[in-house]
Length: 286
Image 1 (spheres, rainbow, N blue to C red):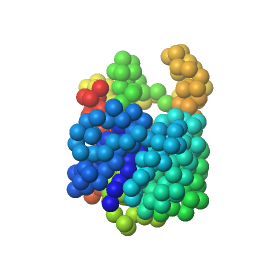
Image 2: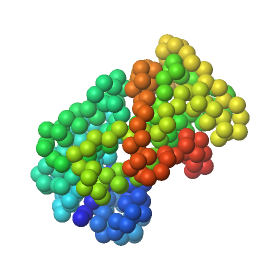
Image 3: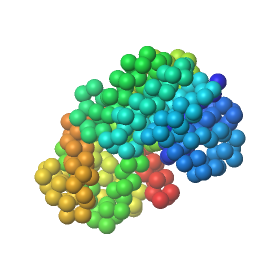
């Protein structure tokens, strides 16, 4: 059985490959698709086949599918382009007749108001329409995303949000990667849609976790959307980023990332990584 991991040179893709190897998959059975294969030379040195795979270049996608049995489509990072990019991969998978297409989607996608939701939902629908044997991995939020708040929290002692008590069921990227590896090597996961989540936390709890990592008090300051927008504008962020962050907090306030589901822990056979532990590791690696 040959497994293709798209976006294999990214943070999640590399962790998926690590998890596959740890679970006994031979390097010769893994194909790493990378936009720039030269940057994945270390994977090749481990015996993994590295091939060009660019979501914007359909010919590379088709070529990457040669001899592949199962595929993990890791969602792209270019918001606004992802629906077309993902469809390119889905169509190539259908032409290749793969035995399984797994996809990293987003939590509670059908009713989500998050700005990332539309492209994920469109991709899920394209996969369903393709008729391919599929596994949908609806990842909640990455705990490491909050590492971006460490510097500001250290400087000000404040975590600002407009989440109004909303909770986020974040888990470590390695947790989601391990779940993806499990889903790829077991037939029982084909045809399943999984809501994958860690322990739900409020922004008060996230602030406390940031403080524990930094060794100082950090408090959460909940503000209105207008106040958040003004603060982000004052920090010099561009309009697109500001709009995204304000909409993200509105979605969190509405419960779009609040998932209580043990599936992730069940798949990986352990508790998900505590937020403090994930943040501490991300801080140390920065």
